[in-house]
Structure formats: structure tokens, C-alpha cells
Length: 71
Image (spheres, one colour):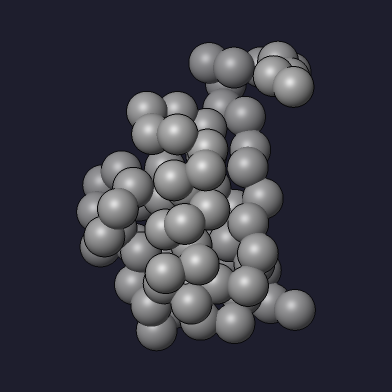
């Protein structure tokens, strides 16, 4: 399955965060999308990817979060 970073499939400067309406469906459809952590809820990020046609999501920590893990 193809993989794409959300920041490369966005029409927004905060597209890497998978905010509502930020992903371009033509670039996301059928792909696994990597979204950065932050700002909006994790579940919302998954919904944004699914709505844009993505088949999966990977949530990545940024430098601000380091190796933090929230269960």
C-alpha cells in the first residue's frame, strides 16, 4: 500500500497535522497517511484521513514530543 506524509498531501500550512479539510483527496486516496501529533484529537486525525479516502494512518511524534508515548 502506498504511503504519504500528510504535509505533502495538503492544501494547508498545518496539513501535516491532519486538520479537518486539510488533505487533498486525490493525493490521499488509497494510501496510508502519516500525520504529526498535535493540536487536534488523534481520533479526529483518523477521521480526516478516512474522509479524504486514505486507508490507514500512522501518528508520529514531532521534536516537541520526543519519544513520548500516551497509552
